[in-house]
Image (cartoon, rainbow, N blue to C red; front, side, top):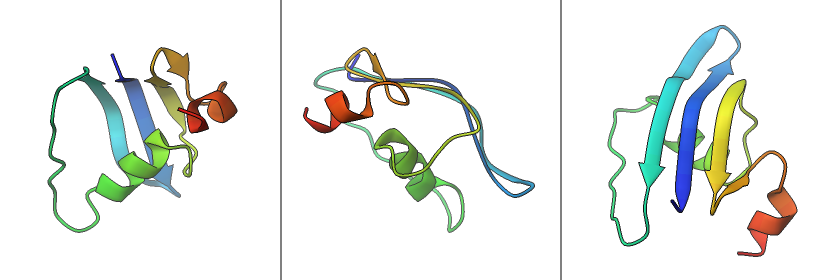
Length: 76
């Protein structure tokens, strides 16, 4: 998997914007991200690339855990 997300939770204060998200994206797959304003689309992308911290869960990029290997992943 290129991107593998497990049980991702992100909150802003008491507001949960991403709740227990599981998502896997394999090489060659194409996805669209749709939702209304404030649905968490930008928050999800920012979490995947490491700009936004998450409350819980795991984000793996090319098999490396994002919160433990940010510098390695940025070089990909």
